[in-house]
Amino acid sequence: QAPPVESGGGSVQAGGSLKLSCIDSRVSQRCMGWFRQYPEKEREGLATIDSAGSTKYADSVKDRFTISKDNAKNLMYLQIDNLKPEDTAMYYCAATGRGFCYTLHPRAFNAWGQGTQVTVSS
Image (tube, rainbow, N blue to C red):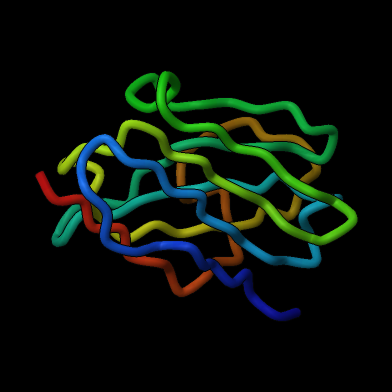
């Protein structure tokens, strides 16, 4: 099965917004998630959305990040508002083999996209 594909990253000024997209055939049936990774750091979970549309967020991002999906289009999104320089990272989407989400830990996800870079300037 083809891996997820992310898009929507770019360079923006602090305070701006971005909406990342992830296309994957599993969006309607599986727990999907967004992650980010800083250079030489572990990948961290940001948000998940399950097959029913229930969402979970890491405490560090829940006030500015919104995960959503469009099952008909096989698309998942991550809206990031009030971007900060510390949001500069590679952002990944991923899928699990389950319909429910029980963790934000990357280890639970087995299908990964190549990532999309977000760069925020001050």
